[in-house]
Image 1 (cartoon, rainbow, N blue to C red):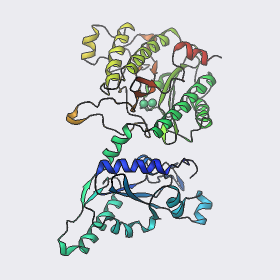
Image 2 (image 1 turned 30 degrees about the vertical axis):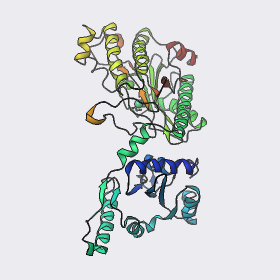
Image 3 (image 1 turned 90 degrees about the vertical axis):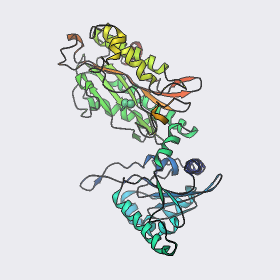
Image 4 (image 1 turned 90 degrees about the horizontal axis):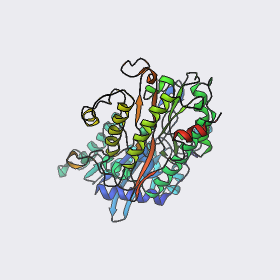
Length: 443
Ligand code: GLY
Ligand code: MN
Ligand code: MN
């Protein structure tokens, strides 16, 4: 319970109000994430559900929020939580309990989670609309339909509907999460700072003969030191041609002089994560072919970041990077022909097969629509955060590319906040130019 200790009841009240105002009359039911078994008696490290944590700040598993609007700037909310339990707390750690939930989290009431099903009946009674995402937990949904059935029986003389009008609340919550509020921006800045510090520490420590996971340990230790209790996603520490595996996770190869090391890793702070990729030479200096590829990717990335302006299409960076990388592949002798034509036929695809950007926030691939009404691309607005992460990946056995490029994989990724006055690179403290990287890698 201590790891997500920053509790701000007023902030969470305000977020709930915004969500409920957007949803309208009805009852919102929102469970947190379930615990999941790893093996034997061991659970995976627990992390609360992102939407649930956004609206409550409550960090423990087996919890559920019920909230409904009662007027302008007014709503009521109830938390169901695990009760205090002296014996379980000796094993698993302290709990807020029902009293703690009521006192610290700014809700109107709290009850033991074991009473949830008997209490949901009266909470839903008379409410015409229910905001709940069906399909995530079949057993939960089955029991919820049991509650509807009991209410229908209770009111049978009025010939009631078998269930309230059902609406999925998650797109509405996602829309609000897409534009970060002040507290989330502070968290994003904190996550970016910790993430950049970790990448810098990784550059400084890496030597030939180390294993990828040795560097991972230094990287993640620096995340912790910088105030991050956990990673936003599993770190990718990929040397040599492992860099060509986009979500490489083995992280166990012994690195050699002359390799590049690609690290894609992000620290989570106050529920939000960074997402940064840096690619640097294991022995501290880029070879000429590595530097040539690196410059092409860096030029594309800088151009992509510049395209992240309020009012632009969300994929403006991708389109910019595709053109820039295409030009770069011609310069590298990989492609031949007119850049326009090559772009039109997506000629970079064999070496650049992923998108350039995604939303970033509580989830590394954060919630939020990429298409607006009419399937038009979403437009960037101040307060949105997205990544810009072009790359080039030349597999070791790729005979289509000049021999000296084979086995080189480069990705460069930063986290960009859209502001009224232009893009702000949150993760600029992680060295990125060849000169700054070689200075950080000094051996
Ligand atoms: N770290 C995963 C990604 O960059 O999308
Ligand atoms: Mn990313
Ligand atoms: Mn990444």
